[in-house]
Image (cartoon, rainbow, N blue to C red; front, side, top):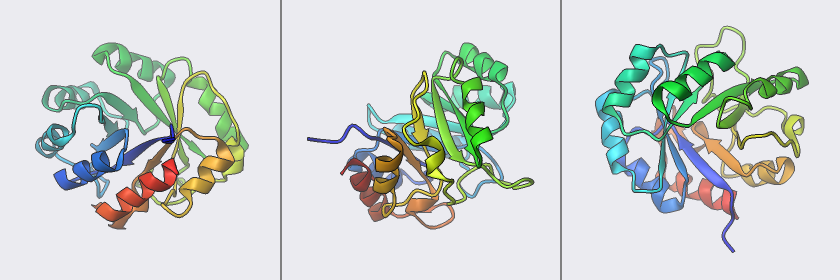
Length: 214
């Protein structure tokens, strides 16, 4: 029987990466709109990538503390299906964005300690999904995509009132163990399927999805 684990491949930059994700059986692709990221795409590039995605492959726009003008520009130019808020957005801002665009919102929460896990509850009533990622070090330029895992024991068999996705340092080699340990039914990968920052490997994409769904 096929696994019901859903996979998100984040930070895609080339149409062939989108095609590889779809062919492998990913459920989501992530398009990064954060200028400091090596995975950032322009509006024109993102529009091309979105067009390359077949029906059924959800297109997620990753933004970091973006204002309405930036979100409007993305929404007007790119056919996205979901927002991923990866900054310090408040629960009120999450609700505001959801109401403004009528699209589902995934809120990323960085985890390093047990106290960070408690912060997830602040968002479960307003976000459609929670992405649980490794917490970036203080002063870091990037909020995610650093290839570092957190202590998975902190979220073992945790259940919240909305779906959640496990991220942070996942690779084809460790994703099966992470799923078995935590009980996650959704996983996200970016640097774990790259040969260099922002350069996806098509074979690693296939290997990651296969390992997650094994």
